[in-house]
Image (cartoon, rainbow, N blue to C red; front, side, top):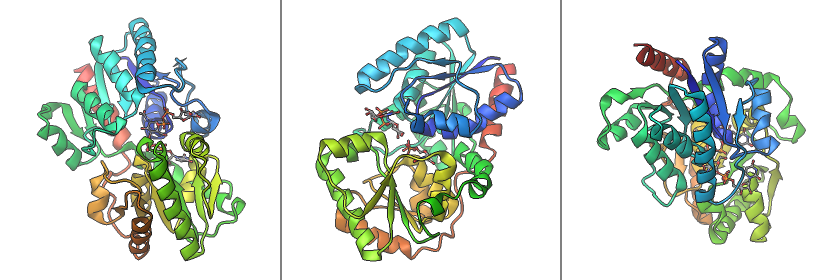
Length: 360
Ligand code: UD1
Ligand code: UDP
């Protein structure tokens, strides 16, 4: 059995890492195909280096462009490699354009597709990610749902139960494998002159937030007011899309500590030490919940409803006043909730399910 792991962006690397490690340790017949959707050192290579992942066998270097052009280039590049390598199974993770292109190129060639982190829905089709995950789920042969709720969503859409497996989310594996390493590594808080539980951590990069001047401006205003009210630093490792749009809209955030995107171990330390996390990231909502750090989501919806039900997370949208209100509520939380995303053995489960199904 030959496996192709297709990935292209930061979250796909942090979430595929546990599975790659298993295939590497087992000397499995597999290879990594990188689409090149993310390419800046801090968004890409730093994760391969730090997590000691083997370099991708292929990188098709699609770079940044419009959705259609980027996805189209990926389809062309991926198809050529799949035709040459003839893997039995292609694995993709999450909801990016790389996931859609990988799943679609494979399915059209009759190669079986495994979708890791399947069954997430925001029910907001204006999000590019919602289309990507819907399409990937409906062409996949193996659907690895992180939670029972995501499985139910898939069954509700008429997907055959035999294809759906509840495995947990591989981000739990990644956190369990790296948190102690992160804590014992370089003193990121010290370097940034931060004290544990005496700062807020922000990430903000969703297209619907940062490509909209009014929304982006309103969120930055809310964050600045939080810094003022609580007299604590608000640290924002800024995604390159957001940096570009901030310059484009000539937004001048006040009271925020902007830093470059950081590596995974540094980011885990920052998350773990934060008093509160404010984010529009999917993965960061999960990580906050797993680490027991309260979270305010700077969106109107989430495909991680488990976090809302547990009370680890609240939806604030983009209104400055509402962001302040939600921060106040979440600051009262003690961080005591169960982790709904699994036991840290998701990757092993996924590898086993595929091996058993493929080898008969
Ligand atoms: C993509 C995913 C999003 C995911 C995010 C993870 C899609 C539709 N979006 O969004 O779901 O949450 O990755 O971070 O697939 N750029 C750089 N260097 C890079 C990559 C991007 O400077 O390495 C800049 C470019 O200006 C580019 C912009 O960021 O135009 C957006 O990049 P793109 O990959 O299109 O989308 P993301 O916002 O990163
Ligand atoms: N992350 C990181 N450094 C940062 C910001 C995020 O290592 O400066 C990691 C984070 O721990 C998580 C992943 O990147 O594993 C999330 O990526 P992102 O928020 O870009 O994408 P999303 O999850 O929204 O698709």
